[in-house]
Amino acid sequence: MNTVIVGTQWGDEGKGKIIDILSADSDYIVRYQGGNNAGHTVVVDDKEYIFHLIPSGILHKGKICCLGNGVVVDPAVLIKEIESLSKSGIEIDTRLKISGLVHVILPYHKILDQLRETKRKYRIGTTGRGIGPCYADKINRCGIRMIDLLNESVFKDKLRDNLNEKNEIFKKVFGHHGFKFSRIYDEYLRYGKIFSRYICNISGLLRKAIKNKKDILFEGAQGTFLDIDFGTYPFVTSSSTISAGACIGTGVSVSAIDRVVGVAKAYTTRVGEGPFPTEFEPAFAEAIRAKGSEFGATTGRPRRCGWFDSVMVKESILLNGITELAIMKMDVLSGLKRIKICTAYKYKGKIFKEFPYDLEVITRAKPVYKEINGWSKTLALPRSYNQLPAGARDYISLLEDLLQTKITIISVGSGRLDTIFLD
Ligand code: IMP
Image (cartoon, rainbow, N blue to C red; front, side, top):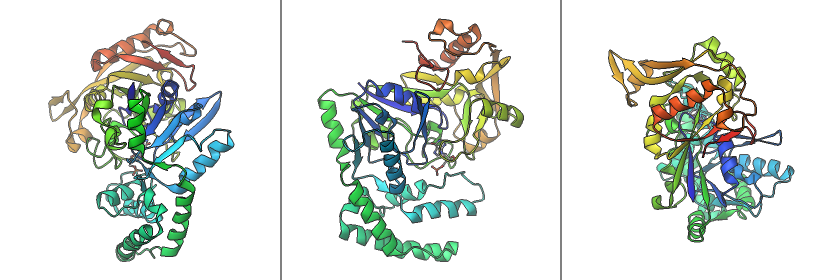
């Protein structure tokens, strides 16, 4: 069975935990887009692991973890992650595979990301990790790929060409002194030597795995509404975060995908700038943020918080072809007297039941809510659906009703055991 896991909101839905659980039954776990702007947190035996690049499936012995061609890699960050996991006793060398076609983040990408942000009238709230400029170079056909780092003359020519153009732009547009060839050249050749043992043909590897009836888990990063095409553009990331990205970002064909699991938080969060129709008032946001530890795993920035938005998640289900849903962090809503779910938007007297792609509508629309009673009991340790308080069960049935999609997993805490499986 080949499964794609996608975030249905603006990222940080809790995909890391679901990936960790489903990894146990998979042979290959594959990242297909994004870079170290992502951060997946997984808690195992009270130890917290934060992943930025390596699939969290690496915590399961014997699993093969891949970075597909759609990922962008900051070599220094990947080396740090490899070293830190190795120190925790996790075997990496035989299990990490990196596509030679991944694009590499260079120092000028990071600086450009940050400089551009300071010049923008409307900031995106980028993580400043160089993700956007690296993808832009890929599309501009001047990017440098992992495989180029293994070939001195190819890398030399590509880097020279890039610096010739970029240093002019850095100086003239941003008043920045630019970058020295030899420093980057030496450093990145060294990275090439380190990574050579991991580089391989990922699409070939996965095709073989599919032929041999192995199970593959495609691990999405960020969320549907950060997708470069279908997200709340321009307040998005620079990759295809939707399930179709799994094929483009690995070379596996569309017909090989059997199942798409959507992950949604029981409420909504967003890091960075951009529209957020159901956002809470500041005081309530602060209370939920504290209760749900809503701080970015990558940048530590406080996440904006709001009610569950079924208009968004319904659109997500259609865009991704989601066959089942996991609802995360239900425990954070315990203790609320009333809970709201957004069922439509209202703008200039018009009701929008389908997600409007017009940025003005999304930015200015008022949410239309359905309200239900909450539950006062904590959700600590229920192991089955029937042990959930009535209010929590009502909330889940209302979500299923509105979204017309089966909920198969409910998460009530960060540990592996704080999970209810409904199927
Ligand atoms: P960038 O991809 O770092 O340029 O960031 C673009 C936007 O996507 C910003 O609003 C970020 O906060 C957001 N973003 C990027 N990666 C993540 C993620 O993993 N979780 C949540 N938001 C993210």
